[in-house]
Image 1: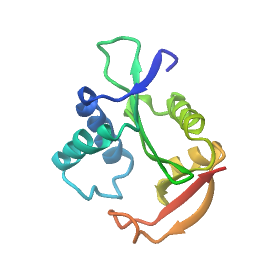
Image 2: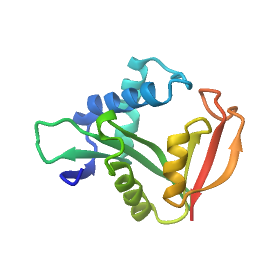
Image 3: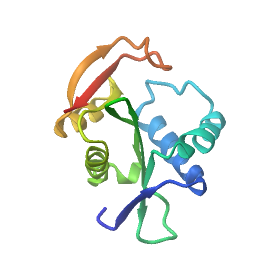
Image 4: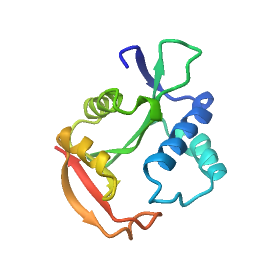
Length: 155
């Protein structure tokens, strides 16, 4: 995925960002059913997530090719957060996720935190390879899906 550029998402990207989010969630996180309908998620992405200004997309050099990934970051006080990081299924294992994480680290600086589900072993191995350490294991009461989660931090 060397021919990918990163840029801030615009309103015109909302449909593709939602496609990436939904495809990835349904493929890799089937054990954590979505708490909202697809239409509701699409409206949230277009009306809230992208306008927040913290969404970066990975765009192939071919302008006719679809976006291949998205990441949403935010800051709460002195702590940076990776709120969402999803790739098209075809981009998983390409190194694109690592490039997104490095971008987040550079943009936010330490500490950077994120949540993932305890059952998401692939994501857990990925984040731990990128020097994120477990801060807390949750019982699922803090997320809409009700699934046990993990709070990670890179410091």
